[in-house]
Amino acid sequence: MSASTSTATASPLDWAAPLGEAPVDAEVRLPGSKSLTNRYLVLAALADGPSELRAPLRSRDTLLMAAAVASLGARVTDVPVDGTGTGSEVASWRVEPGALRGAGQLDCGLAGTVMRFLPPVAALASGTTTFDGDAHARTRPMAPLLGALRELGAAVDDGGRGLMPFTVHGAGRLPGGRTVMDASASSQFVSALLLAGARSDAGIEVVHEGAPVPSAPHLVMTQQVLRDAGVEVESDLAATGGASGTHWRVAPGRVGALDVDVEPDLSNAAPFLAAALVTGGRVTVPGWPQRTTQAGDALRYLLDEMGADVDLTPEGLTVRGGDGVSGIDADLHDVGELTPVIAAVAALADTPTRLRGIAHLRGHETDRLAALATELNALGGEVSETEDGLLIRPRPLHGGRFATYGDHRMATAAAVLGLAVPGVVVVDVGTTAKTMPDFTGLWTGMLAR
Ligand SMILES: O=C(O)C1=C[C@@H](OP(=O)(O)O)[C@@H](O)[C@H](O)C1
Ligand SMILES: C=C(OP(=O)(O)O)C(=O)O
Image 1 (spheres, rainbow, N blue to C red):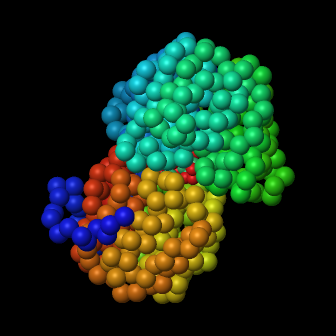
Image 2 (cartoon, rainbow, N blue to C red):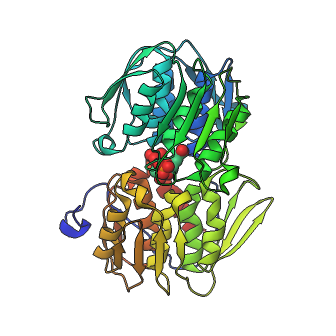
């Protein structure tokens, strides 16, 4: 990985991150959750009747998922709410399931949820589906899921690589049964099997063997949305004291239609709430759920530990910055997707930070540990990679180009740095479209108030 400062040529995708010249004071309404939208789309395509998904996220990852379930046989239609909706927050998706058929060629972009959640659906379909995506997507871990699918009776041809591109030869049914796999690289392997499990002949039992599965809240979310669809699912999640568990079982049976409101994306709240802390201002995110399975809810505790005042009311979540920013020693194993923004705040803190439990981030949109260390150091930081995380010693930073490696969360982390460091230029800010339709608009809107 090369440092972003290696080329001085401006690109049309470069974005000069605005300085936070005054404490922010804003309400920021966020688009829907990627993780919920994509789970609902998959379940709606497997359901036994039409579903209504209100306020879905419309971003690259969810549009790819909608297109993918459509090419596997479902019909996805835009429904403007009260005839007024055109924006990403106000429309619904109506999803009518159809007979599952092979999709032919299927584009996963860089979306983990698409490349992991859909192979089991393709196995249930009649016909062939070839999964491929962005260049970097071809390096994201897939092997444990493909191995498990074969064990459950699917025909998968990956040329022995365990990576995209691969082809699922759908037989119109999946025998199902018990599979043992190592899901320590991604919780999405387990979620994928559970989401489709009810439509297999025998149901699916997943046993995990290996280092702990990351992203426990995402597994709780998978169980919750399955229960919302009337699917019988059990696990040892609770028995493992909040850890992600080692056993899951989905009974065979019908998947009920959904009629749901998609919660705002709490992980995408990270840069906005961080802006309150970094500028000593205030940001409110309306509609923050009182109870949620989203990993982003952990921001309440993380930002509090870093020196913010955090207040959850029925109206929303308010974060206020005060005097300074504290470093933390945190295990982010369960909430890895919050790492880039937390690392950016940590680089601006008064004391050092240690982030642990996140070795699996090396298989995310980019190797996030290497990317964060490289880019923060290129701005004058002192960041080192450990075996399972990052050590961040705050240093006075200077401006420069911050490469994002196609990773939306690298771009939002850079925007946070730019609030406090003059001259931060975010390379390819458009990568934020992976999970946010108009990041720069929301960001400059927040600063304008
Ligand atoms: O199931 C999901 O929606 C997700 C699970 C997590 O993946 P990993 O367990 O691979 O980290 C998370 O990081 C990703 O952003 C979304
Ligand atoms: C890891 C992430 O995404 P994906 O769903 O592509 O794995 C993320 O959004 O931080």
